[in-house]
Image (cartoon, rainbow, N blue to C red):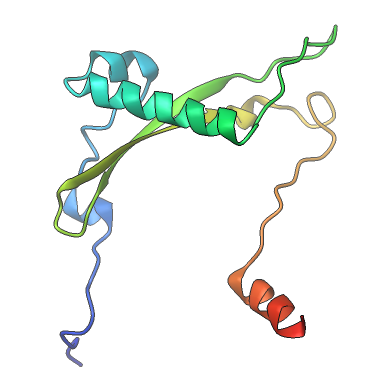
Length: 124
């Protein structure tokens, strides 16, 4: 069966080897990178977004509690022609350092599926 011209075939990044070796894996590598000014701009944009969306509240750490660290994750985004579209920096929590019943009792992240939203909208 042939694929019609109406469809685009997107290859996985790993199959094309696009950008895998160029993205920095830490803050120190990002600021030493030849695109360091673009990575710093991406970090500033991420922090502005977090501030605008009021992602956190700065509070004092209670005695006896552990602080969870964070790290920067960097990704170069490409358009469908393989040209660089955007430099993306994300600040993420190191949740993997937590221990059950020590650092947390329960964690959850509210998510919804498109089908669920469609059902709710149809009911409304």
